[in-house]
Length: 159
Image (cartoon, rainbow, N blue to C red; front, top):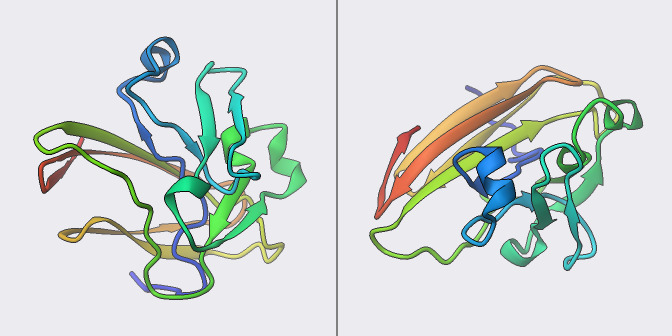
């Protein structure tokens, strides 16, 4: 898969969750990020799922924030409305403090939403850890994808 360095990640909502309904009830052990949400201390509750989202800004120092095209905001949940793109560099990392021997279910949602007005096919490389790389691609406009990974003490397998 060809890598376009103009953006590594269009949109990611990273969450340590098993099921959205469980997370909505028991959020003390979960983190749900809305990428590109500003200011950095912004928090909101998604109306449909009742999941509490917070800005990703406390976990990353790079990237540009943006919004998907207005035509998509009425059809998709609020966490897809904002994004963080990476036009500079070959690797941009989110930083999380993890506990050894703990299991982490990581969910990422990627959505283009024609945020740049170019209505083009997009692709990027996604690294979950130094040893796990997954290349992915999206069609233009409203296409998106959801992946889940189980991460434990230096190992990673797809959930």
